[in-house]
Amino acid sequence: MSNFVVVGGGAAGLEMVTRLASSFAGKSDHTVTLVEPSSHHLWKPRLHEIAAGTFDNELDSVAFRLHAACHGYQYVQARMSGLDRANKTITVSAEFSPEQTLKYDYLVIAVGAISNDFKIPGVSDHCLFLDSASQAEKAWEQMKQMLANGGSHRVSIVGAGATGVELAAEWAKVSKQLNRYQDDTQLSITLIEAADRVLPASAECMSTKVLKKLQKQGVNVRLNTKVQRAEADRIVTENEVIPADLQIWAAGIRCPDWLANLDGLESNRINQLKVLPTLQTTLDENVFVIGDSAECPQEDGSIVPPRAQVANQAAAHLAKQFKRLVKGKELKPFVFKDGGMVVALGHDYAVGALMNDKVVLRGRYVRRLYDTIFRLHQRVIFGWFRVSALVVLKRVKGLLNPYYKGSWS
Image (cartoon, rainbow, N blue to C red; front, side, top):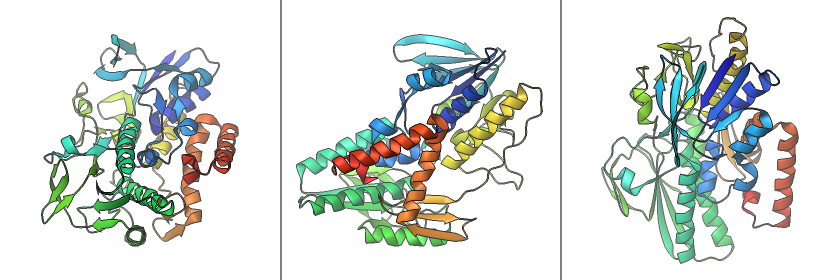
């Protein structure tokens, strides 16, 4: 009997347990357990839409307990707090329950990453982050309060990676909607980036197209601008002070601090756990890491980037490898296949770089591609039938109620 324990219910973790439970369905000699403190799953690349009030939480969120019951795995609503590799146990703690230990034969850590404030003074006190649905909802609540008060408001977003760019565009769309309905509320949106272009990790031609679109949408983009500190109503940079009624920090990532002290496992400077190409940790062949939590090397010496498609591919790969493992077969290495990058700039426009950045596309149809990527994630956890039903239901709700928030996306 093999006991698989997966920690983290993000894209990688949820797809992992879904695939494993399906693989071992009807086989009582294998158990699959998901450990996750949240009650619901939301796809992290769309948290910016929650922060803008344009994401349909009701239709697109996943209740872990119900999903576990339907797919045949166990769900423990708790947070991992310790690891004992010698005894193959993890310690978990829930909000209103005492600590308990869970046994494993194979452990998969898929807790993802959080925003990196780089220890810049004032950031943790005065900026909001978009690491979870609750944080995104908090940002939307503050935005709603500003909109309800009317008048002019200033919003600053630090970090012009995918999250910062998409949030700036989404809020620019909200501002445009307000003007359409003759609302006197004005939003001034400033996007701050330390590098010399937006999306610094993407192709330069993609960055150029995204910058032009953001500027056309009315977003003030400040490049080559390093933040020195954050204060209650302003962002202080090397050369200026940028007033802000609402501040969002979306610059850089790191993993939770507890990963850096996990029973001696090797980690890097941002607390990612170091793994072999097989996704096994360097010091323990029974502990695996997937998604943003892993520093995974490739054949060419590069490190797999922290992107959603990496999490999806790693989950699919490792689920297949576990089927080999229980049969006594050798594990194959994980090889990331870059499918390109797509960034949404509102509900009807996106820019994508495909074919190793050789082709850059933009427009409404690229936005449809962006939505399809999300639906592919849902296909893994729901199946095509329910995904098709969700798409139809969302369209119907949008037709019946043009003010329904899901009709914006």
